[in-house]
Length: 341
Image (cartoon, rainbow, N blue to C red):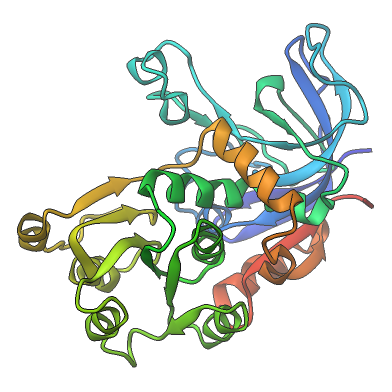
């Protein structure tokens, strides 16, 4: 039997029987184990993406599970395979796809927003979206592969090198994962965050972490870099104050990586970009190689991913997860359990 959690309209969630969809020729059906709740899901819950969802909608895209059934044309997968999903469905014909940039397809459908998602015990998706999870990787950690792939993509596009100094503005799940991946790449990392729980967690994980409201960030970064400034600034906070600060922290010919989504324009110091020849890099989602890198990192146990997970709830408690995320406090990544692993 399929059970599902449904987004039913602004700040309303329902739970009940799902509608299992038999896989088409090039699709697979997955028995979902765990589902991560992310900031995008919270935006949906707030009604900010109602123009893209069809009510009632099963949402969600961070997950782990096991293949339950395969379509008639699927040869690369079979029932019992442990998998996660890269939830991007590209058109294959637009200029971006033809240029090899299918992850930012001009007609991209994000599975879990534009089509039904993983907040259900049985989920049918295109076979090309699957990635294999090794036996050594637990299903809870497997549900972190999608956000970890975001971090891998951001660090890769930043061109981060061993010994470089990186500032991560924003210590939520993505910011924390970027910090972990950046450190694994050999960088020195400063975490900038206002939430006391997240500051303490970052410090427990071995990072320098400060509250920007209580620190002179430019002076702190200058002191740590002998006056040069940060090699890379990852802007993950998504706040106007952070957008204003990022240009004050980057060194001459440094890089600023925009990770956060800014739905409306904000002020950015273009003079600093000109004066220091700073490169600004936009990043969006991930590519296949980022998923494979994330899976390799997670499987090697070099990242303390268990510390990123702060709570596991049954799928029927999705509304509770959203409300806890709204309150902030002692919360980082919440997982929903869809079935016994």
